[in-house]
Image 1 (cartoon, rainbow, N blue to C red):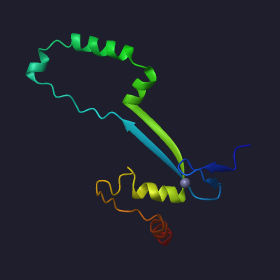
Image 2: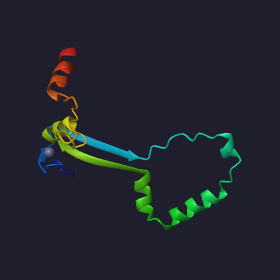
Image 3: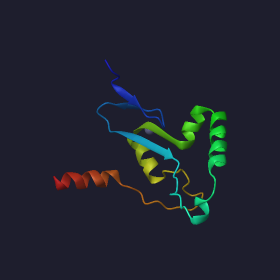
Image 4: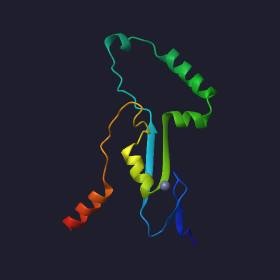
Length: 116
Ligand SMILES: [Zn+2]
């Protein structure tokens, strides 16, 4: 039998199975810009560059390399932590004076119910 409850990954609170639970998935991946290839680039010999890159990658820890390219993180959140996260996803509120509009879950759920 599986667990009857989950644990909030942020605050450690037990989330009972009937209580709202939120799944937070974070994808951190390298955003490569599309390569612009000009006339000068075409005539360039890339062999040396590629060889260096491969050598560099061989020296790196495969796990580290993987994390440098793409990393997915999964968390379970209780409702208060979900709200806290949405109101300040990067945890920098105040520091840079960023004002991120708060997403009101209660309001959203009410609207959904009204529409039904
Ligand atoms: Zn929590």
